[in-house]
Structures are given as C-alpha cells and as structure tokens.
Picture 1 (tube, rainbow, N blue to C red):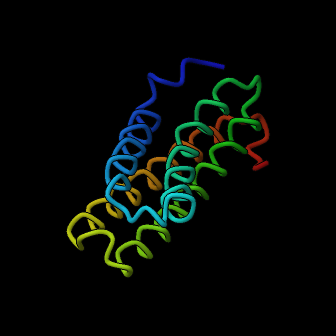
Picture 2: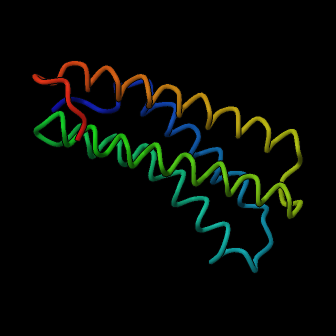
Length: 125
C-alpha cells in the first residue's frame, strides 16, 4: 500500500527493537534460547508486522497486521516485567522500556482507529 518506513510508528518500533537487542546482550547465556530470544522476537514483530501490513493491498489486511503488532507489544511488556523480576534488568531500564512500549501501543491503537475509520462501511476485520 505505501512506504512503511516513513511511518512514525514503524520508526518507534524499530528503535524499541534495537533497544531490546542491546539490553538482552547482557542477559545470562542460559537465557539465549529462552527469554532473550523471546524478547527479541516479540520486539521485532512489532515493526515487521507494521511493514507487512503496509505491503498488503487492502486496509483490512493492514488492520489485521496492526492488531498482531499490538499483541506483540503486549507480549514484550510481559517479558520485560519478567526480566525485571529476575533481576536481569535494572528497574529504571525496565520502566523506561515499558513506557516506550505503552507509548507505541497507544500510537498503534490510534493508527488502527484511523485506518478503520476510512473503511467504506467502518467495520473491523
């Protein structure tokens, strides 16, 4: 449909993903195939699903991928709380990342609503 990397939500999702990759470098090696991998996948899923939705030929497809991105953001928030509870992340770092995730979720919700409002019969997918 259009160029995804011009979207602020994609840019923010990409930055969040880079942050998650950076902070998980310091996680215990025994978490490499556990929490580290899960956090990286859920973080990357946000901008990847935005990009895929933008590459589809319909607004209902875009909405579906935006909904998946929102779910991935929620999954990442849960994983950040786990990492904080396991003391893999300092509280200040976890709180900042959680705030970033919440801001991104609000942006995704607003964009979802905007796309949905422009559907011919204003229906959800």
